[in-house]
Image 1 (cartoon, rainbow, N blue to C red):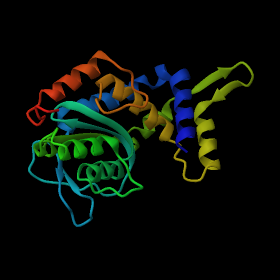
Image 2 (image 1 turned 30 degrees about the horizontal axis):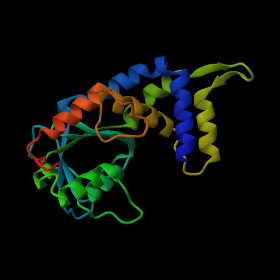
Image 3 (image 1 turned 60 degrees about the horizontal axis):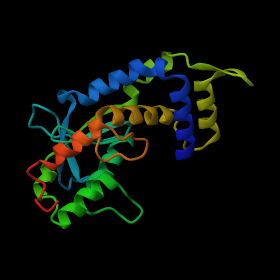
Length: 227
């Protein structure tokens, strides 16, 4: 399923980047807005999710309930740490379990594992666990916008191809395949590169911005002198 979504994401990238740019810009603006940023509170809730979220400028906490497909951006203070996509509460839950070293053998979230392992080795101080924030945008909030855009391209052999119809066709043929997954993959790739998230590797271009963010991270008080 991941390979199929990636291939369809590449089709969006090759043929429809101009058509989709306004949506990407909107998502980027939302994810980088400090007023969209929730503090991640690590704990063990009654629902077993291991975290609560504290919205900005309030003392109340929320627990993400029903999971929705979307794109999320994890920060350490204001440093872009990791860009992800998927069912938001599931992906955040995996991240938190990895941070705490509690993931099962069949679970993984390398950015979370990196923090846990670095704390165990004394490279990072535990205080870093209080410095995580996340912004997220559910795809349902931009679905109507996406649906309103005509996505067609010309093929020398097949003539006019309706990209969205093609994606929908695959979603009907493949059980469990979400037809909006290629679009969240597409947005995720652009966001991680635009922000220079320091823990993304797949689909990320090495850039001066990412290097700058890595250097900002190394200067934080929670980084040990032996890092």
